[in-house]
Image (cartoon, rainbow, N blue to C red; front, side, top):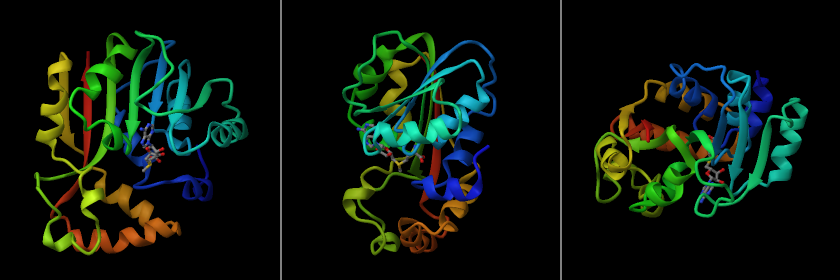
Length: 227
Ligand SMILES: C[S@@+](CC[C@H](N)C(=O)[O-])C[C@H]1O[C@@H](n2cnc3c(N)ncnc32)[C@H](O)[C@@H]1O
């Protein structure tokens, strides 16, 4: 378990530990599986995965955070023999086809996965038969063409384009999966409060966004599926 001050230092948005706990609550296995933590940021979720799935091997991929930084963190937690850090883009990952049993992505898939057929060409081929995806993204209760007036002063149109509804996500990838469940997550308040109460300057900016939202537009969405 990561200590609170280290977690505060490494969070990059709504608390990924709280989100991944809800996302994977029902997924229990002690099998020897291979997991991709896609857009792992500063590695908090990779540690969570290694601790929950004791026999799993985890590849921790991120674009903005260097592999060497995450390697130090994994080593400090004595998990560098189970978690392999990589610095690359989801658009060009260096993995063989049919490689992973599970692909997990917390608060990052919306940055690269909104293009039509991104899942089909970049994600699906990496999964073994019956492979599973567990994705959590910040989203919207409904679809909006442009930023709603209430949020105008707190989020740019460019950032708002990453926020989509449950229907949008479901329609985007359901044709490439044999099972899919897209839902609003319950941990929205808890994950956001944990992020807003740490002293990261980005979190401070988000306080006003959440106030303006007033539970009207924003949510967290989970996408679970099997190919
Ligand atoms: C808000 S952070 C979340 C990080 C982490 N999953 C967490 O919840 O703490 C979004 C992450 O998405 C990653 N990301 C954005 N575009 C990416 C891409 N094309 N390929 C891989 N990762 C990407 C960034 O590097 C960043 O670490």
